[in-house]
Length: 291
Image (cartoon, rainbow, N blue to C red; front, side, top):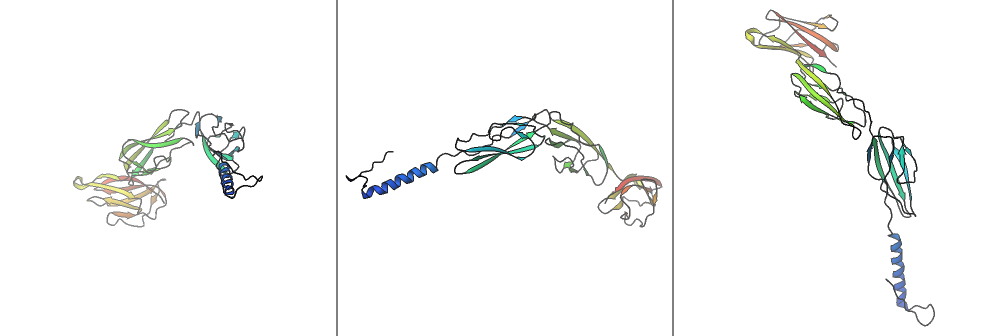
């Protein structure tokens, strides 16, 4: 828009009302300069890669602005820190974070981008060794392995069980059923190749099953890990109980069975065998003391 200024005949002598108009023009011009488009930093999309090189995709600063890359975390080499589409090399197998900064005459903005390099030939998925546990309790701890940046997850294939942390390689698992419980450990190595899988079998046995007592009433002996008590359940009482450690030494019992329980808090951590005579028959149970 063109604003007309009316002058008197005397040179450079504006009429009084035109002073206000000039001030308005100056304010508009100043506002136009200050609101001129400024470039806001955009580092481009995150990348998941397999090789040790890639190309960045940041936005271009204006000629009056300055843009540059900096490495926030990880390990790699930036070819040209001032090039928004620079190449990267020697990228490490981890999550590498870079920051793209643009400095304008009136402001500075930054944006970050993540570059994750996966393994082209990753280690096979490993769900850990098979386990045999003696219940109760009906729980154990997984012992899988994982290699960052792989993302792995547990799934139940057979039996029962609740994994507390489905993506944790050493997660606890509870509510296991008697017999074989099969869990699968699936590791995603996208985008380099398909997922790797491995399975682990957790076999649960009653740590105390010792047969049946008089009149075929069920009798069970088990070790309660919470109270460190050897429990005897059923309609009969054991005539005698002997405890042997893992090297065959007989443990002198400091307490006697009372109300179907034997206090074993004095035992050191380790594996033990309990032998009981019930109804004239010898019954055996294995248990583990932990602290």
